[in-house]
Image 1 (cartoon, rainbow, N blue to C red):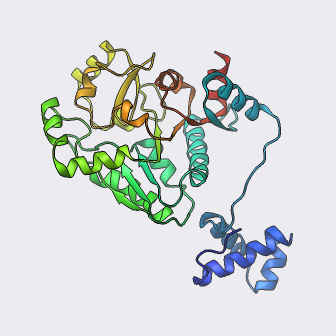
Image 2 (cartoon, one colour; image 1 turned 120 degrees about the vertical axis):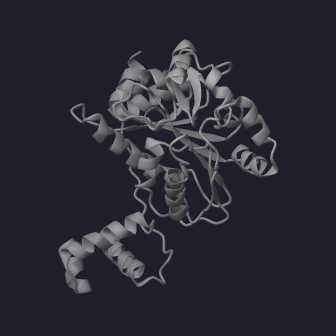
Length: 321
């Protein structure tokens, strides 16, 4: 239990309520009487304490299904996995939200002061950003890994909202990457990448300590934004089929065997090459839904994933194979 931000009267009240609830085993009704408030107000104070990092809850999981799956994934793939319990009767949308929330709660364990976090925008990162707890850090930066513009929109508003939520959660500076998701001509990209203003962002991406990304997939019930947001033309889809693409990481596409070189669209993509991402110490992949199994297999084959947050049903399918 931390004591940050106690100049804020609400934070002080939240800490007092949390101490009585978690350390003194007092009921909400008893806390309400002592604080001279209502039970619902106590509940909100406890929620505020958790969301702002005054209270950090750790669950020590005994041997069970999730732990068995996590150990199997580590043994087979060399990846640290966090399996989110999800009943099979959940819809993919509900499963997706639970996984995103779990990833948001786990991220503060890996991101701290004097670090740089790289994020690939998309449906998964958008959902994660909405569940982030507060953790005050110092000298930290959140950097956008790939451009978000297309022929319909600059993408700045969408990517900026995600970056802002991460920045607010950690007290971090943010660095946008105001370029298209895909250039029309690879030569334009090559020329842009020689510009000093672009080199500064590219260098920041390459120096990231942690990257956080979802897996783009044409198969998922929760659509990947790159496949529904007007980023790809019919010719692009045909090219991806011909190249045997099963997914993308930050708009860089890959095949089932993990290879990504010589995929035509990657020459125009603005996401970092896997050679760059592979030098980042911690690379956290967040994925849910069995429809993404082919994309997950391919992502594991790239050897980019060091940490994996996924739902129980997907983990079972991955391990059973």
